Amino acid sequence: MKATDTQRPGLGVGLIVVAIMAINALSISVVLPILPSIQVAIGADVATTQLVLSSYLLSLAAGQVIVGVLADRFGRRPVLMAGIGLFVAGATLAAVADSIVPIIAARFVQGFGGSAGIVIGRAIVRDLFDRERSASIYGYMTMGLAVAPMLAPAVGRVLDDTIGWRSVFLAMATVGVVAGTAAWRFLPETLSPETAAMRRSLVADMAMLLGVPAFWAYSLMLAFIAGVYFSFLGGAPFIATELIGLSATALGAFLAFVSVGYLLGNYLSGICSARLGTAFMVAAGNTVLCVAVAAMVAIYALGWLNAWTFFVPVALVGLGNGMAMPSALAGAVSVRPELAGTASGIAGTLQFGIGAMASAMAGAAIAAAPSALVLALIMTVLAVIATACGIWSRFAPE
Image 1 (cartoon, rainbow, N blue to C red):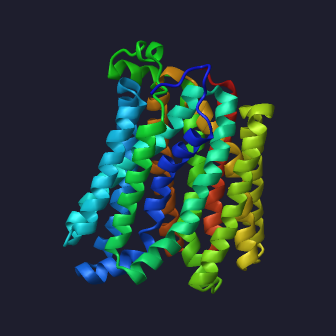
Image 2: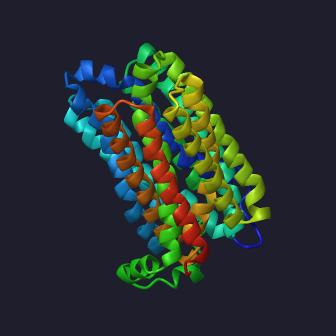
């Protein structure tokens, strides 16, 4: 099944692409409430049980580079179907495992397979549309993706309470089967024969992409923008519960409020990118981001810390992220459109890798010096680096 220039895939195909990309957001968030149940049932310690999440994230980050290269070499459909197969296999093995080590290993397999959804979903959009239109579509798609992590923890808790923690992994496997069946039946091959014929060696393709300064500018901007939010996630739970005194329920409600800003930013990206251009959206998003973190520094330096002064500026951070990230991604996969899969994979690995490091750094810093101002300063440094990369992208050679 192939897409042509005269017959673009419609809404149904777009929903399938969103679904295969949303699998990862679901798989990350849905296990959070069941980790204590796994710990008790399996008899593992807290640190080891945490690897059920960490192993997935590590594999998800590392797998994107490999998947991207393979998707440019062999096509989108076969690599996607193989990835979904690994995802389903990993979730199924985790559901039937009787000790913690096999569960961790199964989650690693699941994460590697899940990376195909992120990489290939992004590459398919760039195969079909130009840079500005791709940024617009990424914005709309991310709005849908943002819903999964908001709902998944509640779903995981209900399944755990009513059926048991193993049902959560079986539910993920079922979602993978449904998404894979839909992709097999309706998703076209978007890598054209002409583009495939341009392939050289894997090393040559990678070297060509990594030698483009604009690719690094866009990819690092994407990664450090994500790092601002990941650093917030690394420090927010401690600050919210220990320094502000919020309950777990209130924390969840305020985090959902922050997500509204991200949704709005992606909506603005969706309606404005094609009309105003990716360069404008990058500049506007980074400006909002810098204003938000600067306000946080000023507020906390004055000692004004409460739930609203903590979360409202971060909602503005989400707004700026949502405005800039789709255009940064569109730029990264557009510098060499024939290598959109490879570009998507590398950019995704940088995004998750730097995001994970930023989260760990913020968590360690807050543990050493419990202060909202410390977190705000870390977020400010990352935002300044992201903005510098955005300025670099305006002048970097393509």
